[in-house]
Amino acid sequence: MTLSTNDVRELTEFRRELHQYPELSGNEVETAQRIVDALTPLSPNRVVTELGGHGVAAVFDSGVAGPTVLFRAELDALPIQEISDNPWVSKVPGHGHLCGHDGHMTMLLALGRMLAERPTAVGRVVLMFQPSEEDGRGARAVVADKKFEDLRPDYAFAIHVEPGRPFGFVSTRVGLMNCASQGLAISFVGKTAHAACPQEGVSPAMCIAQLIPALNTLSLADELNDQFRLVTVTHVQMGEPTFGIAPGEARLLVTLRTATDEALHALDEAARNLSRDLAEQAGLSLCFDVCDAFAATVNDAEATDMAVKAMNALGISCDDSGLPMRASEDFGVFGWDARAAILCLGPGERYAGLHNPDYDFPDALIPVGASIFERITRDLLGTRG
Ligand SMILES: [Zn+2]
Ligand SMILES: [Zn+2]
Image 1: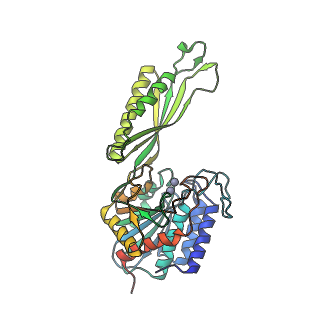
Image 2 (image 1 turned 45 degrees about the vertical axis):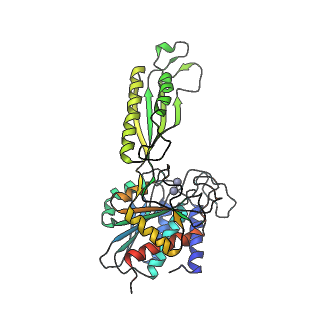
Image 3 (image 1 turned 180 degrees about the vertical axis):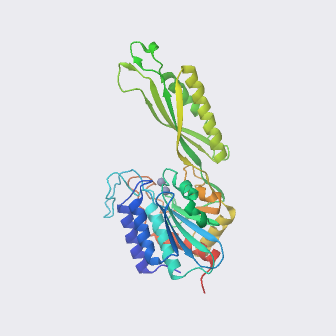
């Protein structure tokens, strides 16, 4: 079925409403409420709230045994000041929906409208609005939440808009889609001293100077294959911006990126060992913190095949261009227990990149994404006769 002109108009208005009130990861209170309010008239069998934080799930249950199919969207926005002349520009200074999550949520609500009008013959559909995608915490928190236990899907799908592709063109593939990655913060503590007598202190300066090139030697990033590993030093802070004090502490932030979760674990160990050795030689103590940990997102063969068949039936072109991607995506977690596939939907080739201050989800993609989700749903669960 296709969405009516009225549906498309209302959904577009809703997307623009979401766009004006972006909320950061972990703080998606009002966004979750807007989703619940938009779901209510669709009368899903159940709405589960506060899932892994502020996550919301709506269950459309046919009442007949069959698979559970989950579709995922994200609630969170970014700490970036939007630059736009659109009347729906963000009303929150410094925050913006600049990763298209407002559009992803709206595509799920569009699917909800189609399910409310024409329920499936068998099984259940779960519309999953997950929190905290941008910091990699949300999907893990959702699947760890006790309330998720009876929502566990057999299949899971998501669409992320990916600039650099023609409008309505999809890229996807079986296997790796998005790399595993994590932030590693390394803190060093020595002893400050007068700049005239640095020998009386323990400075981290030489340790940091040796550690940065040493960490770089761990990278092997020419090709994105199973051996791929990338170490990116993102920030260094040492002492104070003065001339009279020899520094006594430092902090180095580094992002580790690999093609598999196992390789990420090994790279983390290697980075820690290098840091420990150099800290020991310099007489510094150190500690580690892990942040923004993303599992690799790997598409299942059967789920990908289903999505490709659905797109073929709709006349939507698709290939594996630009894949896999170095950037991470926390949808991979839903694939730990389900046959999962994520699709990258193009907004047009000359379109601002994700996380750019002038990015805005193209509303014309709402019915395109929704039609792919609906086709997959009908192929798996049919339509009540
Ligand atoms: Zn993002
Ligand atoms: Zn995103």
